[in-house]
Image 1 (cartoon, rainbow, N blue to C red):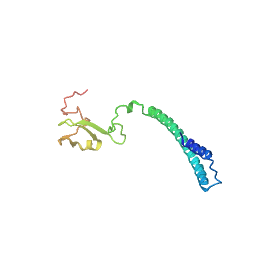
Image 2: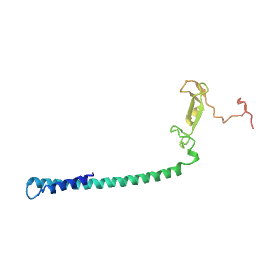
Image 3: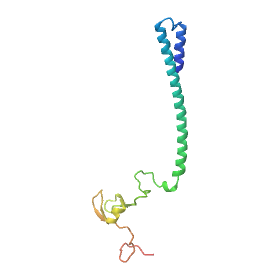
Length: 148
């Protein structure tokens, strides 16, 4: 039973008891209270109806947003990883991934550290030289690859 139905039932009981607001002060107070309850019940019913309508609109907007996100983000460029710590799509700074030659720990190094030329591994503490591979196969590089 809704609030408006309960208030209507209460008014029916008052009429059945033949409470006349003109006869006693108590009946007058009860009549005013029932009118207030009726207004409150109608207001609550309106709010519930509006809340349901807003919920439907939010669901429709959410579906539309999902469609837009699928169109925008359904690109092979963004499918390479789902890791939130991944820096592969950063446009501001270049990051390089490499492995520590001592312990094999995967390291992510930015361009500034690469320019320094050496780094201490945060896992094992071993210092090692960073080689970018730009000078590979130059005279005396000693890497063992063949120049093409």
